[in-house]
Image (cartoon, rainbow, N blue to C red; front, side, top):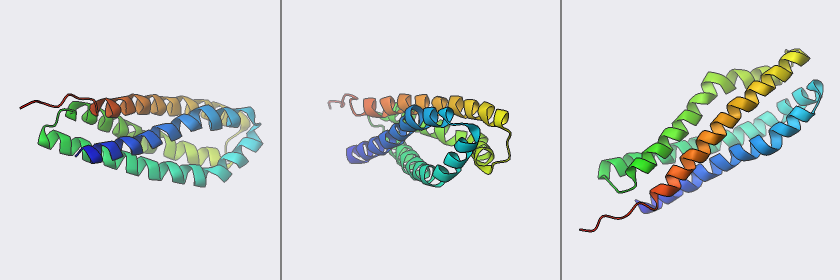
Length: 153
């Protein structure tokens, strides 16, 4: 079980790290571009960045939910921390269909006006920071689960 928990934490760490990289690297770059350049850059990078993040989201979320489920079922010492980490990954996941699916399509579609792009990108950045912070907190919980004291029989 410890190996599953460690693998899940590692995959979740990759997801949270990817989110942080986008928040601190890509988004400021995108915001510095004029709207026409941004639309082209966003549309060009969306398949690669989005595809990578989809894989990390599936692996990170799936492994955390599996680890938390097993830990809860076996009543392991770190189960509450793993469950909190799994909940964080699910919150991150739910944001995609509720906001990012439509927003990404709008930002890459070239149909928005310059002002609408600027406004939407500002909202996108806020939503992304929300997901990133939830991910970092969830990663803390997953790491903390590894330090739960073992019960002495």
